[in-house]
Length: 286
Ligand code: FES
Image 1 (tube, rainbow, N blue to C red):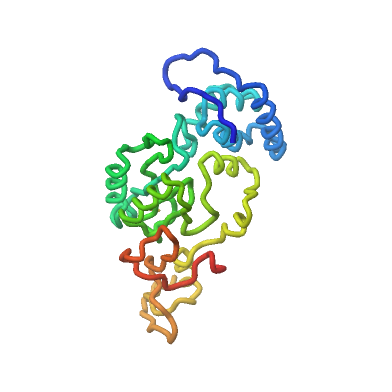
Image 2: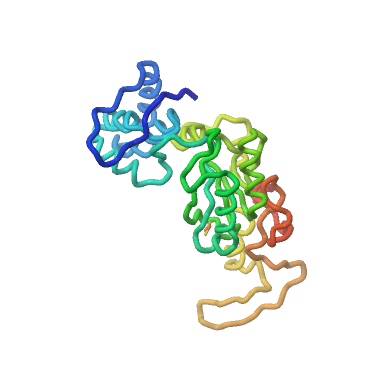
């Protein structure tokens, strides 16, 4: 993907007008932007995907990118800046090919997320929201990514790496920096942050098998649903009538818990306290 040099997005003091994209880049981006805008009844609704589009171009949302969005959507740069600085999925400074986010929200934190984050900071020699000298990895702590049943979770470019330990997380970043292939626990294969941004802008993921690999909810995520449907007996059941009864385990049933996460990928740690996989994964048609 082509990149253009640009400075970080400054906040605070007034700035001179942002430089324009080079003519060829502008032509290409404008064609993509028009395609995105045409999907919406009102052009301003296209702002979020357009910000992903300009982020795909340069790796972060620059002043040039925001001015481009404002011009095409007939918004003010202040309106675009307000959105771009609100959402954490838009970077505002140059960063690495791989955004490694360690969930340090409550559940992941107590399950080991804090330890993972501390060890990665020491291992990589960077702090929160900082990038390794080789430009490969940006480390950040992230809030809950709705994968608490696979805690502690690490995300790379928004793909899930479940049930991590400090050792697997260090191996993960080492592999990323060395260019060795890594496989998310669930979802599509990993790509760079700029490639991910283009997909988030609404363009198809053209990599072979990527869409099919996206899968659905994992085994542990569906446990509550199975309990609600009565398909997973052997647990405490609290019906809505307020009664409380304990159902005996049925033949063939198994204890479904947050520790049912898949353990079979390169990144999950077989020695994790969650233990071995006990249920089907989304990649197996879940
Ligand atoms: S607390 Fe980490 S995914 Fe929810």
